[in-house]
Length: 217
Length: 217
Image 1 (cartoon, rainbow over the protein chains, first blue to last red):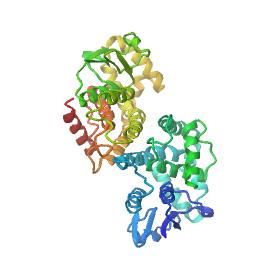
Image 2: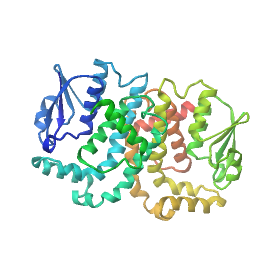
Image 3: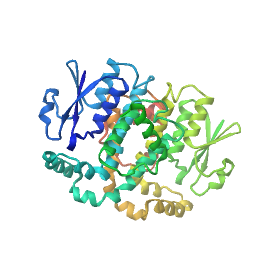
Image 4: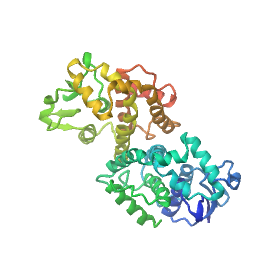
């Protein structure tokens, strides 16, 4: 059974978009797996992987970290059902993967960061606050005050995704790893927030409902 | 011979990223073409196409507008050499196309808009100013004053492109229409500006030099 080291918040809540990508891949490929919870400050639990970030998987002694490296590893070792169904799709998925990491996460985090903080374990709160405040150059309270002001940028990115989906069921026409990348992101947001962030993008919302059903996650 | 209606600024300068996409496609497919210059305010020249935006092509009586629709039309009518080399690539290129239109252009225009204005025909300047000031909610002078402040956002997007290119020659691994989309954008910028905007992204710069050589444009 594959072991997945998975970020863990309060009440055993799992939110990491990158860990959700890996869980979505394992589920899509029907691979049984178990998770080992790792809180923000329990980086020592990952020392065996030679670095300190989740996700990490252990598959019969093989250790792989980084959601993109894990996706490539699993596709090679367990080819069916595919993540990269046709020639060249892996490289184009790589671009979508980075787009989600940067543009989508960059726009969403400024709206949802305090929802994540609210679900952070007591012992992780100081770390989370310091790390995020350094990244954004302002306090979490300042970010909370800007929440309304940051929604238009989020909506702009969602509109861009909406435009791509108009007339097709998946982001690259056919189902690919690109869909699982964004699936992870939406799990991240909806794990901590009730904000109706897809109200203005009906195609994206329909895609999100379909993906949850398809994966059963 | 295919006719292309092409945006025209001062001294017959051609800068439209979308027209450059079409010119890059025509060049890649070795299709001879001629251009009809259209300034910002000469929208009447496009009335025959039923809308008012460039690029528009006329191919033996067939009229097509919108760079994406033109790319699909040309790929179908003149399949070789290909823009969408393998199954599913057209749909994944559609995503890259929209990413360039929104994320890349959105970040670049805030740095380069005054360079474009400086090259705008006298008779188009009032239109250009009014249209862009409405879009950005500020004057061109205010945008000019923010130029330095807007560079980090541009750099962030360029860094994202740099990360994609590390280890591969083209954005989707193999040459596709995705490369021509961004090629059009860089022609747009470099047509009006000497800003060394690729100094911090050596892979993107190498790609840009290779693309210019490959297309001879």
